[in-house]
Image 1 (cartoon, helix red, strand yellow):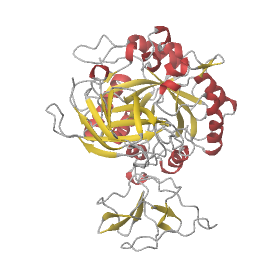
Image 2 (image 1 turned 90 degrees about the vertical axis):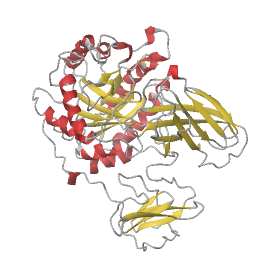
Image 3 (image 1 turned 45 degrees about the horizontal axis):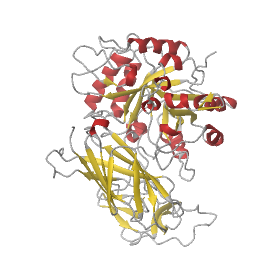
Image 4 (image 1 turned 180 degrees about the horizontal axis):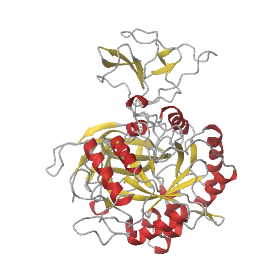
Length: 568
């Protein structure tokens, strides 16, 4: 008997299908991703996200584009780049007959997507409804099959319009009483997610598959693992108070750059999450091909985790009304304020705390990023105060003013029940606004020096270092480059950054590299890159040739410069 999805329970296992991530690195086609229908004979899988609809073409006459790797890569509808995939349509209906939910995931790392405005987003909702859900069109890739909803895996772009898109789509959902449709999201674990954060606060999500990998807050990093932040959002901030948060993990060592744990190590973590957090809904694994080939004692990764989830299930809560229009008024989704009842005056620096262990005052912790964090010159409410890493913020004349707690970063800004104050930074996990510990985020504008360079653009670069310290001889750093506009990055690019002087790069996961002293230059191999990229991940490995490691941005790379050279 094949199991069926139950949204009220915490036993659900979710995966992504369509990108053949394990098969990409294996010439043996016997190890490639199997057909969608074959996975639906596995009772460990409850929800399968088809990945991806990676080009929106919102606001244009052209239909969207789907990329399902070798599963469907020919026979486009006349005059379009949208493929017709009737065999997958049959598999969708077969899977649904087995009680599975089949959802289309929008976004991903490659492609070109996003909305210029809410009007484009609303129009795109109709496009998605007509071609993939309960509407009608002559260009339906999966024929008469109706998918069970959409998933937002937004890894780049402006972040505009997603709330409007979801709200418009839910109005269309109301028109079909024959089935329930879902809206899910797959944000990165740093909270709040830079791209989906506003939509998560302003629109109704049924499930959120948080990616606890390839980030400082990965499940493999217990000191920074932040499922609790997402549970707090689910139970206090989300419009849907019964939204389910899923533990998103790699399905195999090769499925992600960082964050993989074998099933045996995940099982006690699942027990802990299940006991602590009522929003827990199950586990999501990237992706079906990787999980399928990750076999231990005759059982796949998915089967082992599903067995754990079924061993002590919890069911409860009221499922969200997918067939009813949820309340989405602005006053239900107002971002929490960073203000506090500080006793310090706006014009003076808070004094360092001299005692942090009093019974009446919790130990200070670094300020977690919020939806509306204090940024120099940004609007704020008079007399409001807040924190941004080593800086404390005061609102003067309706604008944030940021001041350092100290000149040498020996003090950081913290919040306790008594208000905002500065505390000693030694041993603390200091979090700057939008840049949690171990993660440096900066915006850079590409130079116009090269003739082939694109126009200036906004790029966000961040680094995540994998547990390297002064006692180790090697380092591993994940470099992530993301477009912060709706224009994708081309296949020809280069990025330069500085590393500590006693580190030597030995290999990278894509492209070519050179090193001149502490400066490292990475350059793409255009023939091996997608023509359009919203996010680029590069694993940089190297040796530490002397001890101790010199200080450079807390031993993280810095001084980054990015240039998009234009498609080749």
